[in-house]
Length: 311
Image (cartoon, rainbow, N blue to C red; front, side):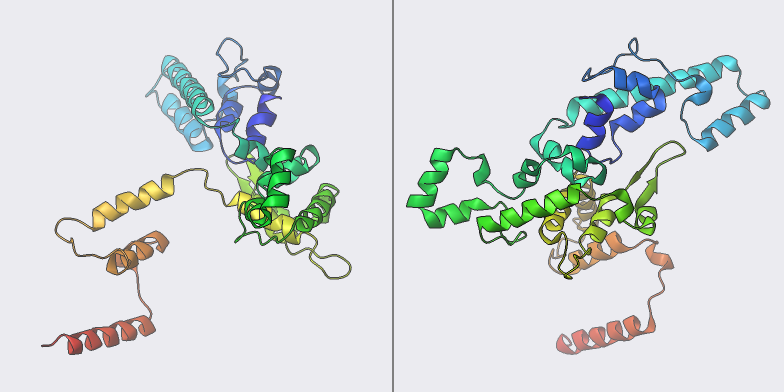
């Protein structure tokens, strides 16, 4: 499996270590070396300094500093050398520590529209059925001697994917085959434009959650949903967290708000409200101008609280 294919497909075209390599190395060099992790400096043909991706503003700043005489040619060469070392170290670290060969990532490839023809239905089943990975003998014992237990063990997420029988899996397979036969032109151009994310001047990708939102609304000639079941599985895959950074950030926010000077803040009360406002707010609290309705409601709540606790 080629390096580009392996990494990009594993992360469903999300930003990952391949973006560092694409900034640093020529594409044909990355493709030539398959499964050689980490890629060494001696194996790779580097981009020249003027082709190395450092961002437009950074490059303009370098040119200005050089023209003004603040830095010389040697300082510029040292800068690009440091950039290469950063990209190489970051890429090697990511490839070493990320679970690129994990079952979840390998089976999640079907959710990317560009990978549909190279995917298979077993990847979908991985997120739906648990029994399909059991041996035939074990499944037979469950089915004939413990039918209730068999139904309980059949599906991974019975509350999210409300499949009630094995026949539902057959309908799911039909939808998957229909999904594979789709052409990119079957999805309107405005959907692709809405899903487009431009990382920088050389890298861009499409958000598959927007694409699958459209696919979940597509209908057959009889007005039935074309991908009713498959879209649920795909959206479930796309909502799997790829990092715990948000949770760690929230824990840090809790420790900053619930201090030893404010130990009585309740998680299901005031503290929860504070965290909700801080997580949802896109501007500093001092610049927030609450609507009149909010102010009136707050005053009424304050008056009610004071009346109940005046004694």
